[in-house]
Amino acid sequence: MKKELVKLHHVRSKKDFPELKLEENEYVELAIQRSKLGIIFIWGAAGIGYLALLVALIFLETGAVKGATASLNGFAKSYLYLIILILFGIITIAALVGSKVYKSNRLYVTNKRLIHHCANSLFSKSVNIIELLSIEDVSFKQDNIADHIFKLGTIRMATIGDETTYTFKYVNTPKDELDAITHLVHVEKEKTKRRHRRPGEEREYDDEDYEDEMTLPSAKTETQVLAEQPTPTMPLDTQPPAQNIQPQPKSIQELNESLS
Image 1 (cartoon, rainbow, N blue to C red):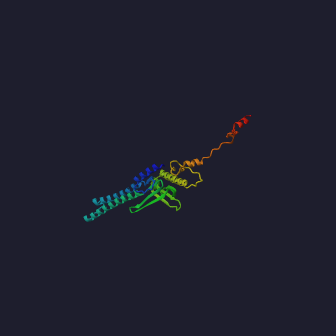
Image 2: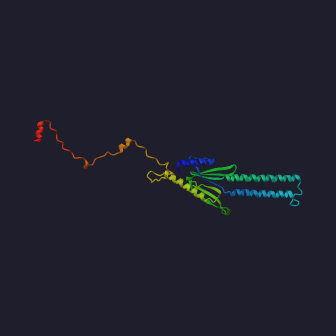
Image 3: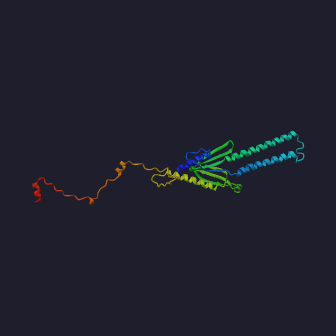
């Protein structure tokens, strides 16, 4: 990719993802988020809690269970109403916090690295940065029946050397994302191989990706060019034959003798 286009992608990525600290000429290729089904499950659980509190409130108001609320005075009922209100607030806050933490988990794939933002709570966060060169394997797995039903799973990224495995859970079946990550890893490794080849080995370049690696020969001065040119020689068979030149007479007497 040409340098001007790389710089344009870099500027756009810094604008779209200000939370990332991108290096020079680095830009985001993919931004993978968790499945939206997780948000639905969180608020579904909150809805069940709301429903339970509503049923309890109805029992208090109507006395549906005989004798259950008959002996309660006004102070006791007010105390129960306060507890229901507090529980309602706790469920709402828990749902909001859970949604925020769930959305905070993201996986960014740049042209150089994988950046994993991991959050377990509001106060427990971490950032894992994995160089594309250190990735040995990228895979996707589903652990249970629910994953197959809802088409969810976990992306697994294994690194070279220390054999550390990073996971990104609750992702929709990411076939296209896996292919893209595998391709980026392959491209980065090929670039590194080409940069570190020995001088005697055959070296192929791509005009767009590797034009910055090619060096032009230094310009030679006119004197150096003339010095390197061979001196022209005339073949022996093309050289003109030697001519016999007679000496010129010095006087009239010598001229008459030569004529006679």
